[in-house]
Image 1 (cartoon, rainbow, N blue to C red):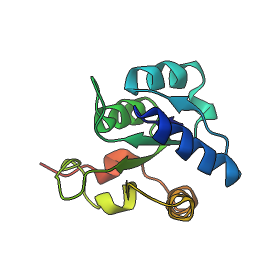
Image 2 (cartoon, one colour):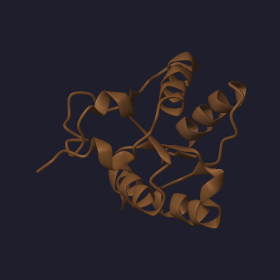
Image 3 (cartoon, rainbow, N blue to C red):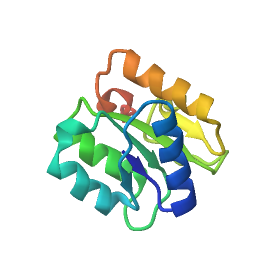
Image 4 (spheres, helix red, strand yellow):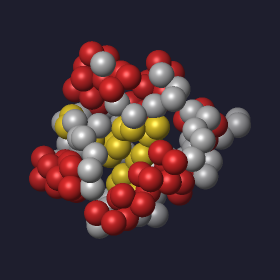
Length: 128
């Protein structure tokens, strides 16, 4: 599932995924993503979400999905560099893709996430 509030970016990312052989489901924001996800959570293996979105952030969306179904993999994307936008997570580079990116970069990041053992998003949470 691709969660991105920018329509042009969302459609381009979905097109990249389909060209790479994946199925892609679009959501304009976290609220729509949760509605889609709740209808059939087992059909979605990975959520690719923008970090900064109106109403509910990508981090909040990811934690909500992760609490309901920990095996759902998460990948964050953002066009904002240098900001501490995912400060609650350790090893954030493993889960983060900086915009703009190429289809090759996207495919490599997704393969890395899907091919390795996943202990849930909680494994990336910083201990406080």
